[in-house]
Amino acid sequence: MLVAAGTLVATVYLYGIVPKGFIPNQDTGQLGGTTEGPQDISFEAMSQRQKEAADIIKADPGVESFASSAGGGGGMGGAGNQGRFTSG
Image (cartoon, rainbow, N blue to C red; front, side, top):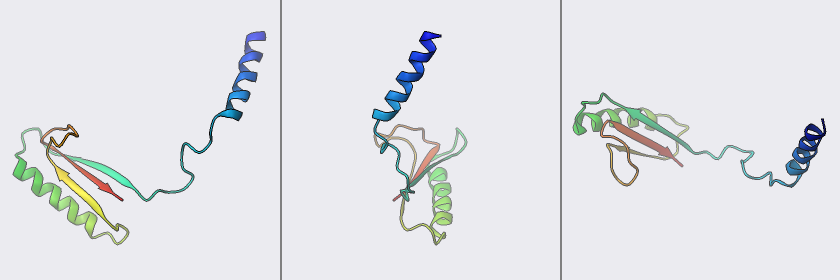
């Protein structure tokens, strides 16, 4: 019983001293996503599919700007059948 009470007191104390600004309270307006093709897809075919997905995103009036990439490498890892989107 004493251990449970001590744990409760320590939890309340630590909650009070931990900074509360770690997670923002508002929407930051940033979004990221990935696409994935079949394992045996060529780079050219994956690039074409990534472009088609980018065209859909570009048509959305709520998107101000974004970046799109296909294939692995670039220091980010990933396989040749993956694509990435980031907006800012």
